[in-house]
Every structure is written in C-alpha cells, then in structure tokens.
Length: 268
Image 1 (cartoon, helix red, strand yellow):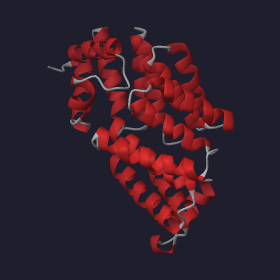
Image 2 (spheres, helix red, strand yellow):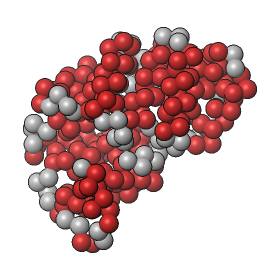
Image 3 (cartoon, helix red, strand yellow):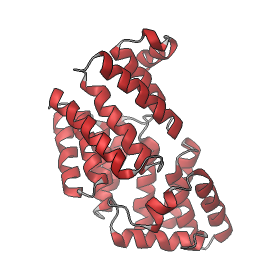
Image 4 (spheres, rainbow, N blue to C red):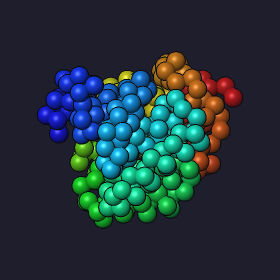
C-alpha cells in the first residue's frame, strides 16, 4: 500500500485514474490536519467521478467529513454528518460487504448519538473482516461513550495494533487517554495525551485531555499551557465540544471533562 501511495503522489493530478486518485486521497489523510482533509476530499471526489462504482473513495470521503467536524471542529457537525451519511450509504449500496464502509457508517451513527447502532455497525464490519482497524476503532469509541472503559481500550488498542501509522491513530490514542481520564487515572491519561501531541501536533484532542488531566493533578501552570495551546489550535471547538455536551459523550463524562478544563483555565 505504501508503494501505491508513493506512485499516486508522484503522478500529475490530471493523469490520475480512479484508483490512483483514491490513493492520493489516502496519502493526504495520513497528514491528519484540516487542510489535508480538504485535499483528501478533493481526490476522493475525483476518484468517484472517474469510477462511480468504486465504493472505497465514497467511504473515505465520508470520513473526511466526520474527522473535520468531530476532531478539528472545522465543519458544522450536522452538515458534515449529512454529507458523510449520504456518501457512506452510497458506498454500501455499491458494496454491502465493504467492511470500511460499515465502520464509517458506525462512526456517523456514533456522532449522531446512536451509540448502540454504532457498536452494531462496527461489529458488522469486523464480521466481514476481522482485520478492519477502523471497525475496532469505532467500536472502541462507542464503548467509551457508553462508559465501558476497559472494553473500549481493548478495541482501541486493537485498532492501533492493526494499523499503527494510519490516520485514525492519534484520535484513537486520545480516546484511550480519555478512558483513563474518566476513570480518574490522570497520570496515565496525561502521559498518553503527551504521546498523541508528539505524534500529531495538529490534533487538538491530545491537548484537551492533557489540559484536563494536569488540572486534576494540580499542575496548574502546565495545565494552563496545554489549554492555551488547545485554544490557539482549535478555538471553534470550545463552543462545539466543551461549552455544550456533544451527542457522542455522556453528560456525566462531559461534566468531568469540564471540571478538569476549568482547573486548566477555561472560563465558562
């Protein structure tokens, strides 16, 4: 797959066929930042235009929207989910046994607050392909939202083991950190959050968990530094993901997160 990515990156965009445009989109997804997600979306749309029967770029197109909204707060959530659901259901209509599309549908359901449906779609994807990393990732994220922290971590670790350098890895690591945070293991949560930041400095989730964890530990200066970095990186998420409880988080978990962030310097 690395060879395919490199070949696609080196070829002029106007000469890409559908498969190559899809690979080019995957290359941009690995950069894991808002600008790269927008570029990935362009190439996935190109892949679909050049072969409307190719399900994979439709599934990945949907993921550009879910990540843009839920991770980077770079797209209005409801609008993003409408685009994502349309694309992924088109993918499933083309290939009902596409494990990645099933996992992506699970992600859409998760972000809409349908946690049970998210788990079901994730398990369908794993039944189709036990090596589907994102199936484990979506299952873990849904179990985290359901406060089943031990099983959530198991699924999230499985996702990372299968695809350790994939574009979802920083998100899944930050969810593992969040699981430890919600269990009040703030030291471990902070350590994993630092790992997320080292791997992906543009991912705001690591800074958010780090700030809340350090706040709970009483390391207020360091907590405030992490909070300031979070705000500088992703100011729009304060309204979307902190001031209000998003559908993919239980109210008790959200209050716990807010508590740590207040200690870190957030003023509501």
